[in-house]
Length: 465
Image (tube, rainbow, N blue to C red; front, side):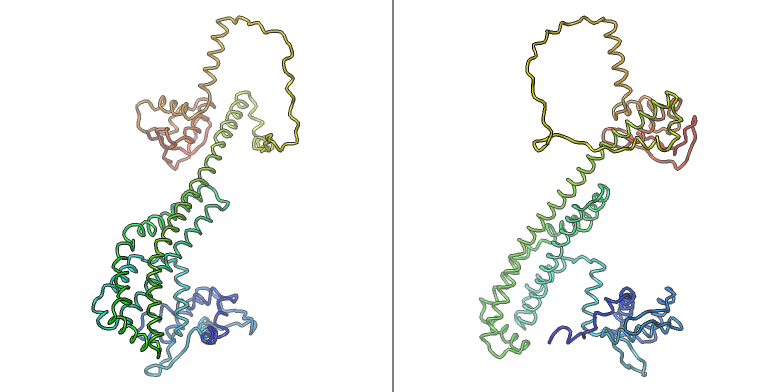
């Protein structure tokens, strides 16, 4: 029997139609109403009321169905009835007459299985590996189960939960790959760092860390493998397991049944031994993701460092023109935007078409004779150079400036800093710019107030050592 012989040819039609979101919302709403009931069903009237409220909130009464064309419903209850009818036709839900001749809505069994899987995908629920491992261990060491029905009470449970554990580990393995792909996408440094902390919260410290510590199956594996060996080494357990397999699976040949049991045992032992290989791959991917994210962020952040130099040059140019009485130039948008022009940089390498200059060798020129410099002029040049170095805007100079202005104060408002000259305002910009950086020794806290000081309007902030 094929899958579509069970669910029907149009089962997935509502999830591929133009109203797939609406259908999915309706299915989830009906599921939530039914799952807490003893019979896993709900009165049709209750379902209709909830769906009607849903459509009433959306103010949606007109639909264009492919097979029927446009339908315009009188009210939201009529819409609810129509969607229940369609979900029945598609094979998701059905209807039965219960006690007191009240009609009840229930899901078909296969629809519940698929809908629960869809909901898990949406919620991205993470498996509790510790609980799965504890279940495997509890089943394996239950001595009463071996004495009663080893196939039904032990082997089936071990197979289901070991397969579930391996399946969840492979899903974790795949999810790490998703984060690695994200780290290599064209993203800003802030986005990469945000993804990294999301990864660290959801996987790094949550799933991966537990797998290496409390959820590590290595603590229980020797005992589980020892119990699995009983099915092939203990004749009494093996014979009772074979009888249980023949009864449940309907197998008439005891030889085939024994071969199946031995095959299941070897398969489960192999899965437990392959556990380490999966964990190793997860560990390698975890390490690769962390390295990829860090290296990518470092690259982007190191590229951003050039912005400091660009900002420095822009502000220095601004101050020079302002002091030279050319502030009217900055009122023209076109002239102002010229400083943001970007030029392509080039370099020479072995593949360049440019012919390098040849070395002409010694041209036989006359030897340069030294000229004595005036000591006073030399000292003057040194003082000019010192002044120029001090005027350069660097983090060190700005930190020294903050120390000088604040003296022994722990906190100080930016509006209290000297703002008599244009250079003072530029320094204040860089005080804000270098705040919180390594080695700065201070941070800033916004006050939320806009102020005007000596013609300079800016949001005030507090400098805190």
